[in-house]
Image (cartoon, rainbow, N blue to C red; front, side, top):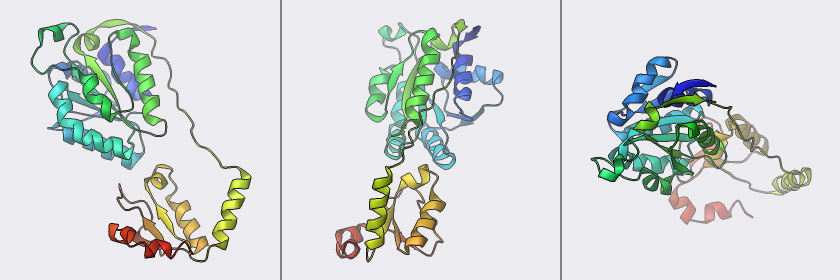
Length: 270
């Protein structure tokens, strides 16, 4: 155990969980984090001028890299600005730790400017939301937040960081990261049954979604489509590119019109 400030421990924990970039729009309550960045030069800070942009950049970075990502916004109005982008992160299942600076504990009783209960604001759009009330709990909270964000179904989590927690110093044990391996393999009989049905199908079709990308299975999906000799459509509302676009089996995105005109799908169910 070593004596550390909350701000430095926060960044050290993020790095140990695999975070390489911190996206943010700092205000006064986040200044401790900005000071601590000098102690962690290998963590790249990316500033945005408005919180919806900050969370959107973090969302895009995570979706492109497949990494856990972190974003930090400024108190209640900043979290409010971020809510639309946070909804998108929830919708696409982006593993994100979103934090917001909070007024010092006890100061909220004075109803200061920019104060509101941040956890209640964030809860509807995240897998888990919590406010740090003891610096000693910070390592456990960051570790749990990262685990929850990365565990399927993946998604964003939220942590409220009061200013006094960031500025305090205590002896801390940062602990170790935990990654839940959620990969599963169907039983041999289920795979055999599926293979028989596919081989017996006269006009099969594949509809691909975001899970193909999250599973890093673009090439495998393409090889499977080629072996089966069937057309491939991308889901109706794509979150990105979910199939190799130049592959000869790719027919493009499945439009709403095609879905409503059931004859296209029904022709593949005969």
